[in-house]
Every structure is written in C-alpha cells, then in structure tokens.
Length: 207
Image 1 (cartoon, helix red, strand yellow):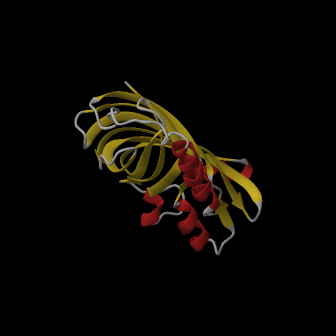
Image 2: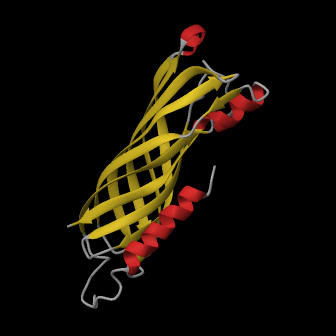
C-alpha cells in the first residue's frame, strides 16, 4: 500500500488546522459533551488479497477500492464517546491472470466505543465495537461459481486523530482494521481472509 495518500491526508490536516491556530480560542471547549455527526471516505482492502495471491502463485490479484462512511455519536465525557456508523468498501476488483474475474463489496454497520486523549485541537483516539458485515462477492463469466453473499459478525477497531478547525467543525484521519469471525469457504481461505482495512479522511460537526 502506498504511503502517499496517508502523507497527503496528514499534510492537508496540518494545513487546515494551522490556518485556525492564530485565532484566540482560549474560551473554546474542544472536549465538551454533546452530539456529533460525520462522514468521510478513502480507500479499503480485504486481506483476502494476500492469501489468494499466495495460494495461486500470484495469478490472482484484488485491488484497493474506494471506501465511505457515515456516523452519529455522543461524546459523554472529555475522554469517552460512543457512536453508530456505516462503512462500505466498494467495487474491489478481482483479476485472474490479468482477466476480470469478480468484484467484491463490503458493507458494515457497527456500534463503536471511542476513547480519546483530550489534548486541545489535536485529539488522538482508539476505537472498538461490534457490528455486522454484509459481503457480496460476484463472479464474472466462467467464475460465476464464486458468487457469495453473506452476513458476518465483525469487530471494527480503529486508530485516529481528531483535528479541530473550529469549536464545531473538525477533520479526522482514521485507520481501521476490522475482523470477521467466519471464513469465506467458497473462495481460497486463510486466517487473514477475516481482516479488512479502511483508511481515510472525514469531517465532523459537533453540537
């Protein structure tokens, strides 16, 4: 995975926040309780990529697809919040010997527990929560037999950073591995098949 998107996101976050730090915000409370709403996007992949390539001698490849998310949450204390979110990874392309073989889409709904370090405008956090993930693996042509649709229990985890632009608006960068608890038996399967990863940039509004 290229580091350039991550470097770009951090650079953008730094520029946006730096433009606001000249203002006198001594009365601002960035760690207050209250509701928040957010949305974001970036990239996403399924670590089925690694096992499939290993088991086929590198003849199968899964691309990184776009991801998007939306969330609503409540910050209960300066260091703790909980939220409900939707996250999707779309149109991950599967190629066999350079030929289009399938597409995969993943949709996750999770309830997250968020633990923050309330340090002024820049607030790092960790997150974890249970949810359900709907997977749609669509084979094409001679690979129609790979078609699979299913729901799985999943635990979504994340590391992130909230960067306040104003007292009400913030941007956040997040890297989020999620773990399924059942193998895909219709396609080559290893333990790593159960891990997906999303990363990207989001915007939030705090009440």
